[in-house]
Image (cartoon, rainbow, N blue to C red; front, side, top):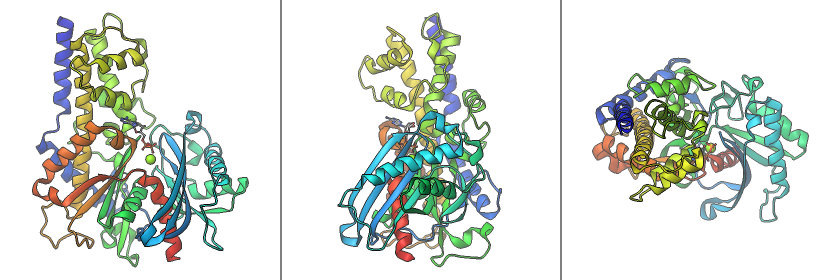
Length: 470
Ligand code: ADP
Ligand code: MG
């Protein structure tokens, strides 16, 4: 009993360290807006890279033809094709294929990784049915969604700055990822060309905009996390004075690397960071994204097991293993509505072989998941409100200041994509609630909505939009 008492007080301490009262969130909102500004003014001006995407025109809905996309995320690889019929018929048909990225490729060579993509794409293209038809004389264009920080030099080229999310393909850093993939595709035969290189957040923005012209921001909450939004070209001072015709440019924020002293970081977060492949980087991502939430929980439970014998005299062996508890496990625990927390018990048994937990122990485990998820969700909301503030849509500006664009509806839509947001309902609810809390009255003009698989199809839609404007 006294040990459980010890675990309880440890929990309280952890909860306090994770707390995100609205005053603290407002500091995060402000920091986000300030860092965005700094990152736009000069190269290296902020931990936010604020990378120009070279996307100055988003899809409008009238694109036509057959387009492909490949999407290399953090966990899965997708190939997809879409037949577009223009304004009235829109997406006539869409097909995709998804495979898990073999773990050895995440730490292998560039050639192996890009050849894997080319191989999957080639076999997918070979199965193209008769209901997919490229327009006469048109090649098959590909949009390439590559969800890692890339310094673009054009819409269809860019060099990899660094890896995130557990990838470490050293020889790819500094390489042009489009050229590397194009070479591997050529070797395998299919006549295709990559016409757009986009980040997942930029892809999600394009995918969202195709359906809804009020979409101004896109946020990914999947294995990792990122955001992109439409900025006034003039605000991007680091790019000099060559403005695109549209006067706008999509910015890939790489917000996973955001940092502020106002973030509620605990010793557990510090150890986690130290033991990753990219210590000191992606601090925001490590507090809010799917790759890490489960491991934050695991580390807290491990401490409770070691210092308060939460699961009996022995520490479950497997709990020592990094990433042994996944974020899907957390969301399963968190969704347990039964009075005896039966599901929590099942997860502990299935993942760690812990038998016969008491209700009090299961409650503590549930609370840890709740604390970690709530913190992540509320920080993500603060990030979104920070972007809204930067573009003058958070309700604190007078109507004519800031806003780069038109919406007649007066609404600003945030397109969300990624497995974490899509499949974790309590995370979603916490995020929505925090955004509403921060926005107050202005929340009636802001819509945060799921744009499922927007990041993948968005790249194909961008390839279509580029072909249209060529
Ligand atoms: P990627 O980020 O690789 O492009 P996804 O957007 O599909 O891939 O996100 C996959 C991630 O979503 C997983 O790594 C996991 O962290 C998270 N996830 C998947 N299923 C769930 C779930 N049921 N609950 C919470 N998170 C989930
Ligand atoms: Mg993705």
